[in-house]
Image (cartoon, rainbow, N blue to C red):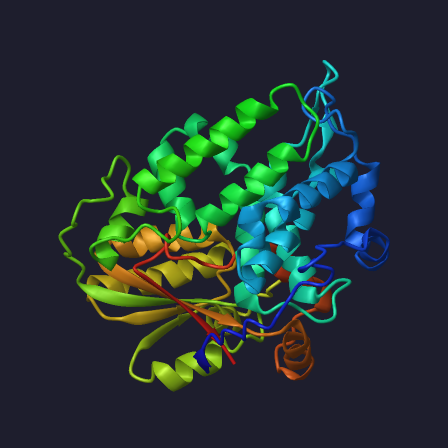
Length: 386
């Protein structure tokens, strides 16, 4: 395995316009990107979107984006990623939209759901020449995830934490550009108010030192404490009283977790959920409460001894990882997340030949659940790609 490879900046998103004419072939775009079609059948509340359906809004957003001088002055890679995010920013509205009893049309959670849908579309290369490299894919995913933040950050319980946390995974200057295009690409009575909010967001992020790059912390432990303790101060230098280290593996079945631990952790204890299932003859399709309980018991023994170990399981969602990291933290252990990334083609090929094969329908379910870890979760997060 090796560090995640960052491809060259020669990559561009299909149909992304370029100088000198900045032209978009909308007919070809619609024909090739079938995931845009459901947007045309999804209504929006006329009070906020008098332009009509979501596809009409999306087209207006894209056209506003590519007309912005700030967008045209970006490099080719940044232009492509923002263009893709504009096409995808409301991709989840068809499944999130509902009409309330008073007639209002709402789409709760569409940014969060849309981020997961965006990852699948780009990872699978749906309608594209090929799957998009993971580093670029995740940048687009996070732009979709946070495209509404500039409009709503002041409504958050802790606006400072909201922007600092978002900055760890998204370029907030690019988020602001997308939000501005989103605000301009609609027909509503409060458009200028929306644009003013975005201007305030920009100033707020500059003040919090996280506008063009992630907010930095004095130490990894200080960052961990900030994101894991309520009412903490981002400038606080936390006393590091950690006593041992835990590696938390993250990856889909077939990503190479067992191979990595065998190669890099030969002297470490391994808490393996797969091994526990085999030892206790528990089918992966059955309820897994006993498996997790037994694994936690093993972990607690090692934590009390202050012995470093690897927790080897898929750990695909943030909520599962948070539960485990809280356990490790209670025993003053530092958590190092190792995320193993590989192509879908490789995953399915490995699964076909592995001794304990995962049913394809289950593997696809895992793929849909995957939430790639970020630096807000642990002391250290490492992405690896083979």
